[in-house]
Image (cartoon, rainbow, N blue to C red; front, side, top):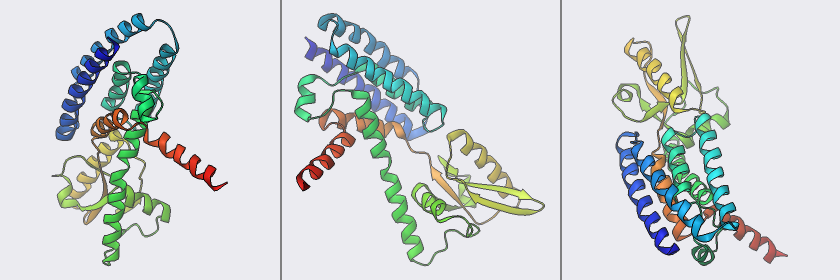
Length: 267
């Protein structure tokens, strides 16, 4: 009976994450009805499973999973690292599938707390664009291109962070591009343009900078290129991270375990 409940949960999660991933890719905006659907489906199933199992360790694991997703999702949202949809996805998934079935957890050799696995896997996956951007920018520098024109005084650390999170684009192309936000602060002071890298950026701050920079460009004050960062469709990484959770387990936990095994074997 419990196995049947989990099959229903998997189907609901697959439907919700597939639709939300498509919407995130197309517009970076996701209909809240998806999270309502997943949560409204998950809570009755959660209550039913609690009734069948009775109070026990499963309840503690489920509560831990839901608490982790709620605190982590809301905190990252408040810090502007997560969008609202990203936080809602993490929370609704923890309510829908709070723990991995015991048999599957043993088979995969991973812990059963779903929200932690999904979060860890999603964050690891979301770092892959940084590798691509670093290689891309390094190749541009290797060809002799000056990618930090006007920013020569910035620290090496800031430049490396910029190379891992963004790239330069012509200002004439910026206003026609979607989902790109400046990681430069540009100000006009006493008729002189002042520029500096500011890699720490949230969605709201990025939109403000974008408006200011486009205005300076339209006024003929600013020209050339600007450093931008792409707004990543994090829901897609969460969807893939969820799939990995139920087919492989927690990437971070397994990596840490492998490091422990290596240290043990070296002794």
